[in-house]
Every structure is written in structure tokens, then in C-alpha cells.
Length: 88
View 1 (cartoon, rainbow, N blue to C red):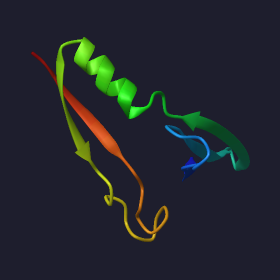
View 2 (cartoon, rainbow, N blue to C red):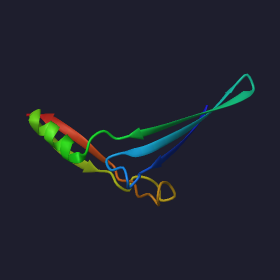
View 3 (cartoon, rainbow, N blue to C red):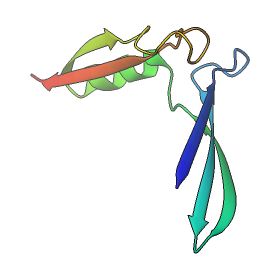
């Protein structure tokens, strides 16, 4: 199986991004091609901040921008934040 993935951050749909997957599957010499498209993202960062605070979780944010190679995804520019929480 070969998996191709394309991600797109749509400026007109804040807090989400579009992920398109193409699967190339070869079984017994026959190739089948399957595609899948999803809009991902759940809540705005403000909502996440509020949820963590209400749950009594101390949250640290780590910005992982720039972890992709420059030839991938808009010259390596891909906004990515992870959250690490600790229960007080």
C-alpha cells in the first residue's frame, strides 16, 4: 500500500484544515485506488484554553511550526501547536 497525503489550511475556514488521502493498494497484481477527504480541527484555541482551565489542568503550549522540510507544505510553513496538560 502507498499512501499520499495532502493538507490544506483554508483561510476561509478558521480552526480547521482539509486532509486528502489517496491510497494505492495492490493485491494479487491488481491496483485499486481509493480516496478520502476530511475536514479536521475541532475547536478554536480559545475554547481549548477554557476547557483545560475548567478541568483544573495546567496547560503548556508548544509551537511546532517549521518542523517540516522546506520542500513540503508551503515551504515548510505549517501552523502546528500541541498541548501538554498536567492535572493540578
